[in-house]
Length: 113
Image (cartoon, rainbow, N blue to C red; front, side):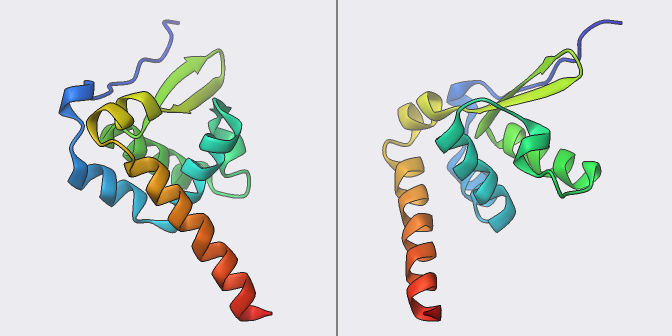
């Protein structure tokens, strides 16, 4: 059986509206946060409690928007951030979004304390 292949937009095709839409959903943003911290990860580890269909939907949206690169490795679906491509297209965007997300977590914890 041939390995699965995935379509990814070329770096110059990555569009900011699609990236921002992909990052606007808390579940996907959390997945991106995990990828930023851990590096390449098996998709199952990004949402171990999620139904497979939900995980596939969100990882596909991240891939189609140009946020992540997906490759098959045997039965695994390995995912990594396209941080270099995103930085080249939109300097500082990913770092700013992730920093803002972490700040919101800290603010939320303080507010609940």
